[in-house]
Image (cartoon, rainbow over the protein chains, first blue to last red):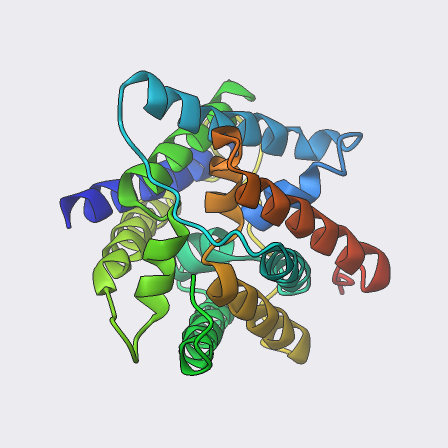
Length: 136
Length: 140
């Protein structure tokens, strides 16, 4: 449980630093979209954020912290899920970070609704997959 | 500081995702498996993150600009509309299918895990398809 609380605190601290430091909301969906807006100087912060994010994995490896990734190897499922997440977060303007952490943290009603909706959809999806015997 | 701040924020964010186990799809799916073998621990990740950001966000209201930039960029959208709900339902469905959302997927990229790379490829493709076929929200 302490790993979850500590990790959550680090995420909250990261979001706080970005807000107090440069006045930006740390949403991964916006960061992802910014990959295609490299000519827009207002988005350059997102590329620096992405570099830091990617650096976390090698840093954890370097300090010897093991971080398991248990994921399906069903290619069709991976592609369908990736497309849904990419498309859905773009039109919904945010994901677990932008709506879930920052949006709820600043008490945005829109983000509360979005977060409850995607968690509910996730719960229904997992329940339906279990019902038909499709698991990880 | 203009670029070091977001770099450090990204690094801390990634470390938080890895320490908490949010980057492990199986753990995320177990969190969503409310009607099966539910493992609720991940709620503490969001709880701790939201509370921390809530406190700092409230404190920041006494400032009229951030430390290293000229203004705060608050999201302008406030309405709950069909576009938001459709997007959240699509996202949640994909999240449940595999157990990855954008942040954890990106933080797992340098593991070289083939499944993660396939997911991230499709994630970027989905983002671009939405951009070209739907486009950004028109700001009013």
